[in-house]
Image (cartoon, rainbow, N blue to C red):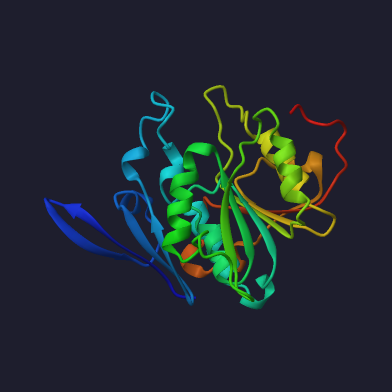
Length: 259
């Protein structure tokens, strides 16, 4: 599968065109826009690199949501390496979407996708939807894929009502890349709510493909938790530090989560 990243960046006072045949986030994060080629798909990703740093001091900054990360490239590469007909008409939700690459790739292959993140990321998600032809003013086309943006912040009071609303539409596939983090105490405060969100979206036959999920937490809410073999990922995107896990068959919740 062809993989290519194309963008412009400033080097020594000059705007230079760059092409990469493998991920390099240090280069990618210097660009305002990146053209991503994944096989036959070509997606336009708008970034806000100046928003990456300082989110801890300024909560209005986007932080990690402002740019494209290797985990999203690997997950999107894995999905696009499969036959595109598998996604026709599929109902998908992307969690913690940021710039929305994974959801956009699914929509380009014929899925109906809702990309989600916290409220402050909505304008950037919407800009990327429109940049790739998913303008809400035009609406979906008959027989074609579609993507829309929605707010979803797991752990926020009332978040499971939003999850239930999405689940009521029927969800075939949940995708997420790099959504959980480790704090200074070595704990992941976002992970339990993230896994609960995945389980709440999934029905008996749904699949959930996630990058960097804490596995022990996932096993509490899913009957089947297995790692996607690295060989299933296109060669250019086989990064040893990026793993993909498939979660299926959610278990009944022991008690309803707060909110």
